[in-house]
Length: 482
Image 1 (cartoon, one colour):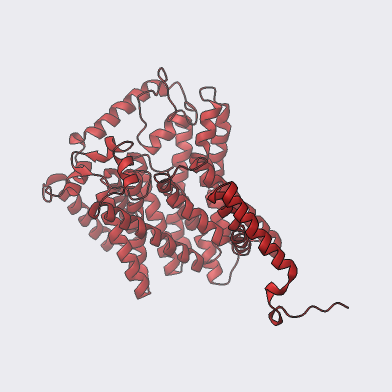
Image 2 (cartoon, helix red, strand yellow):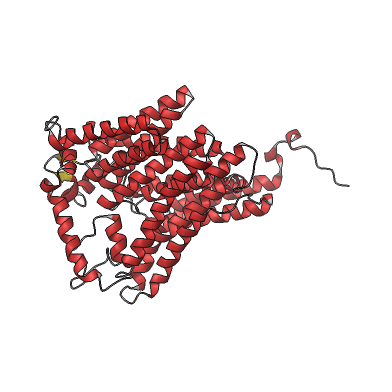
């Protein structure tokens, strides 16, 4: 019988076949470098690492999920420095497909059977996705526009939630994800602060004074955008992070983690201000108001009302701090009659109402961003996420979409008030739902709900809210959502 010697008793490279493979691989890399350039050689050299990464992801699908989230966070900023060979949306789609492949193999390998039912909210999400998929038959739209836009407004909300339901099997994993997200937000805020203090690099300067000049170089100064698509997306994401991490900090028992979340909340709040995004101001206002309501304590509600009235009065009825360009610009968000941008949006929406009555299912998905001279929407920007949904999917689609968001908030309040007993899970749910409420308000003022990475982050937060009873049951060694 052939006996295999222990691997640690022999040198791995003493195997003639392994020596041959290593030498052959080195020769192939050298040949590729000479004949095809550095990139093919580098790609081949990285194959072993990619194979190891695949094995790690199959064993730990959470790793591939973090990889997907990280790509969503940075991919739009990367495009400022180097053009991608394929569209950024397609890159994300491929990584989503990779995640589903990984969890499928993991499911088969581990014979894992999740002990929870998909939440009712997921059915609402699927209904929205199906409505958008069926809209391919809308005679007012085109297949090309539908293919370009369907992923961001319909598919990602279902796919990211489903992945989250599979990945987040414990409170510890959710907390780890939030810590990971906090670190990314910290990097984003520091990048914007660096842009303000140190200045822009060459690629950012080119983008700022070409693509972004009309919206980012304004009378009050520069609007900073970090590595996001634009200042609006960056500002709203920073507002979301401010709400979530400040609430988590209030309820965190670990002193070190509490301190870290406070630092993140402060820096992201500053990032929101220097973005110059006025609609982002609605996120902390609405988010903290929702959180105070979820507490159901009159003393907090009264204190919160006094605080909000004071802050509103400061911005709306005083000129204190107008020497600061960031405060001066944010103040215009509270003075609608003086806000030219707001008035123009109202005029555009009035023009849209003149013809949208004839299109109850909308002008077709993708129509708002792909117009030519003669189209109804030509020279009529939608400007806000909900107007965008209304125009592309009609009043029927808007009702379904609003119902999706509102049902998420109503279910979260039911969980917080009636279902959840664990104080930390209740705080986690309150933080996530408050952030969602704030983003819903921002979606009325700006078109940010379907952009990387803000939209994907909100979808994950929705899943975390819906998983909260399951997470509490897991923590209490019960495995079924009732």
